[in-house]
Figure (cartoon, rainbow, N blue to C red):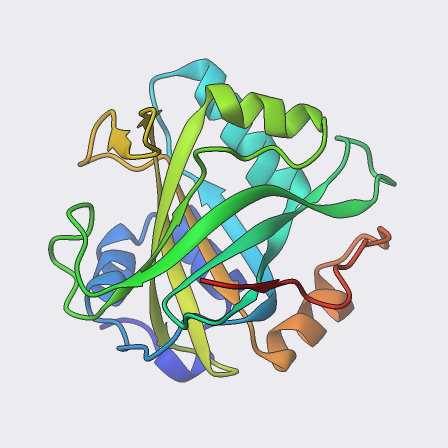
Length: 222
């Protein structure tokens, strides 16, 4: 392996995408850490799109990952393997726009998943059958460009860091997702719930935007 686990951050992982180190990223994803519960709280995030043929989808993903997305927040839950969350995203595609919790998702910790057949650890899934929270333009977009995430935890600089993959596809009436091409992702993303990552994000990867936080953190009864 041409990388050191103890130095991995969401930003060094994004750099691996930009340098097309996909074999290393897949190796990390497929040999992750087993979890006993979903993470909870605020996490720093970084992401990078993968070149795809659909210009519209590519444009949406590139705008979100490069300009608007800052991470996620996972809610606490009575069931440690099932919860909900939001994405930390700019309300508008403007430099001074606030970052708000939007694009809601359902999340699960599962032992196996068909979109990650080679993963040797359990994985976390994030589904977006009903992403709208308020009438944000981006949420409306994601009702049309429907996506699904699978992520695996690996050892990082500050503690566990998640290596994630995103697929595009369709949700049916029951909220079940079918990928348009299970063998082709549209983006890699990386999130870290550790305090060190959040501090690094604020000190070195922030543009001064105000963020609206969920305080207290919602609790989900499952």
